[in-house]
Amino acid sequence: MPVVLDADRIGRTLTRISHEIVERNRGVEDLVLIGVRTRGDHLARRLARTLRDISGQDIPTGALDITLYRDDLMRQAVGPRAIVRKTEIPFSIDGRRILLVDDVLYTGRTTRAALDALIDFGRPKNIQLIVLVDRGHRELPIKADYVGKNLPTSLEESVQVYLEESDGRDEVVLQPGGEQGGAA
Amino acid sequence: MTALTALRRKDLLAIADLSPEEISLVLDTAEAMKEVGERPIKKVPALRGKTVVNLFYEPSTRTRTSFEIAEKRLSADTLNIAVASSSVVKGETLADTALNLEAMHPDMIVLRHSSSGACHLLARICKSAIINAGDGTHEHPTQALLDAFTIRERKKKLKGLKVAIIGDLLHSRVLRSNIQLLTKMGSDVWVCGPPTLIPAGISRFGVRATSSIDEAVADADVVMLLRIQLERMEGAYFPSLREYFSVFGMTEARLRQAKPDVIIMHPGPMNRGVEIASEVADGPYSVILDQVANGVAVRMAVLYLLAGGANDEAAA
Image (cartoon, rainbow over all chains, first blue to last red; front, top):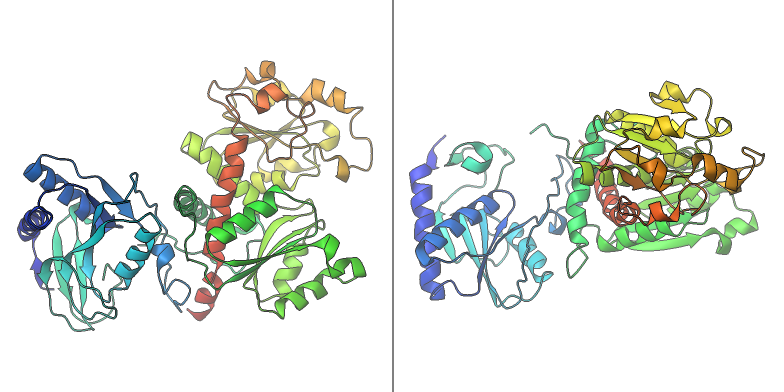
């Protein structure tokens, strides 16, 4: 199983993305971080820490569960259903610039669900998408604004993101063939 | 990931059928659903395109409203059938009514009926998922789930808690569902009422029965009062309502024997001055309105977990 990103590179990638965020937004004014549960949530909290180191300011950080907005919710013929977890956005998103964080960008359907969910919370000024890995194969017109790593994949492969907070280690792995659940 | 992610059934008929894992799944899912109710837009598209029929053969405000709000928050299309205005008054049987409804392809039917077992009958003849919203004196599973959710919210656990359930034990479906649920989850359940209202053999269900309210309340973590159901009583079970209150009514004085952080629950509707004193119902220990609020979240969880769930299992 080839390791695509190890712990060091994940750390450096998040630092680089943090600097890009500050540069593009000319500071951190009005920014909020919202991670898509569960691994996007961990990444969002890490970005909040690096952004605080860079700018000296705390960025409000929330977590979004998109299960109830999935377009395949009632279509899955087999397999386990996703467990609905709590969405925690304890601040208003009206007029804010949202940094939406996910681990892997694949078909774009998760992002579509996240956008619909966010719009139900208010009217943000804009939404920018951050992903650790973009593996291609989009099925919807969605593009990330900040990408940790572009990873060309075949449909048979799967990308597994492991993070310290949930999996005890930092690693992105490309698995050949067969579907193995996971983040993608 | 061996954690349970779906209910292994088409219908929710009784707590007796559920495993502790399934109960925990409903309660965990309800926590996420509760947050949906706190948003500015209290609606998610999860059950879009699903049709839910609320078929109520008994009067109900709380349960029917609660189900309807839950269905609407999940974007289901809902239909309420109140029996007074339906063809039941023209003599149609429950089975015929259900089959006629089913011909219009609803996805779920929420049924409240005065006969125990009515939901089981419907579940056998209908393809739709049947949710029991109270059948006779048998079970009221969503009430027990919302009670457990409310207890867990306050006490962070169910296991090991002393729960005293006091009142009309004989006619209460809420009691039967709560006994099933709480004993499965490891609570220490005490039931208390006049000897005439204690069903024979109730201790077989793993609870302790007593007619001494002091014994029931002593060191309790949770005190749950049940309504005296005059409409179901044909004989004289106790001399008068006033006497019932003086012997079994929950007063502040009696409550002092419980734990200092005791919570007071009541499934409603309350008879103030019969099973519960007003000072207790409105007092600081009361979580009675929390129960109502949590009812919506728990019913959203049940609807979500049953929608399409059984089909998944059948196809797998």
